Length: 104
Image 1: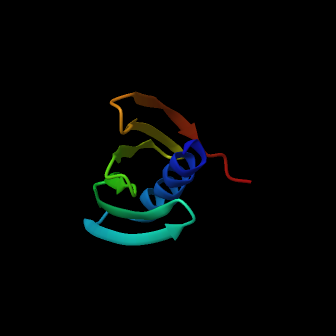
Image 2 (image 1 turned 90 degrees about the vertical axis):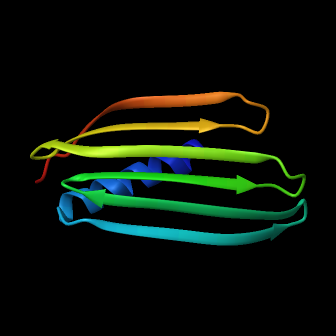
């Protein structure tokens, strides 16, 4: 899950760096494994150099994982982010920080 959240944050950095116009998206997917079927729904939006997203994944037992995150361009090459996740049993994880991008 950590890799997924880091990947999502980095993708948002790339996207925020490229746009300042408002935009929104939604995604729905279903994945079947040997453990059962998982369904996911997610949505996000960007405006004024800031993006946010949220999503829910429901497992074959009906339990859910919810995630959310945001990233904002605060200066040229600098982005503040936050992200959180709540597991099916109520446990939570969150982080926040600053990403600095140095171009060659």
